[in-house]
Amino acid sequence: MIFVLSASVGGLFIWAGYLKIEAPLEFAQSIMNYRVFPMQIAFLLAVILPWIEMISGAFLIIGVFRRASAFIISVLLFGFIILIVVTIARGISVDCGCFGNFSRKADFKLMVEDIVLFLFSVTLLYSKAESLITNKLRLKRNIR
View 1: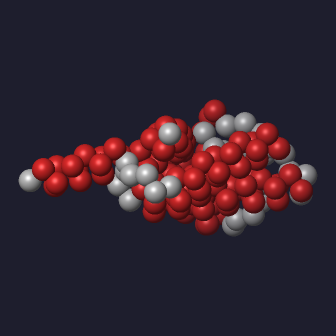
View 2: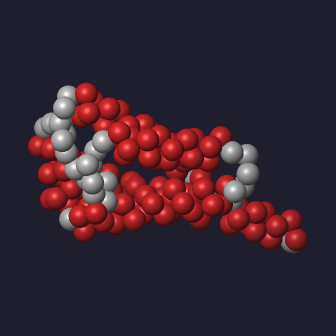
View 3: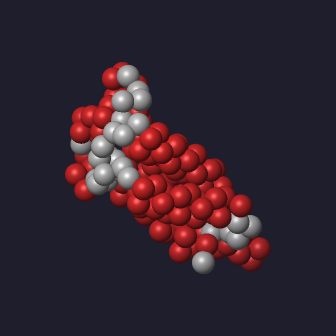
């Protein structure tokens, strides 16, 4: 179960990060469309955030720094949820920018999806189960 959650959440963040890395200017514009961050911060986020998403997603899948990765992803998702709520409350219609050209409107449905992903990532954060890689490394050490 934990591996399925790790692969699902991690894979989604790898894909989302990759699509943003391919088009950083478009992602920066998506960030600016929320009307929350100044242009300089939007450009900085557009360059840094996708790499954080990809690295955290990859680490989550392979089980390296799994808790730290789950924590980072949880914080990101919490921020995304707050951003969506604020955008809806302000009456701003904006594409989320989540998946590059595949993005859709930041709306209630997206907020619910992010809440579900947030719950998955928090489950991974507090899970005591170890990753498959960690288990294999531990077994190799015990055999020697």
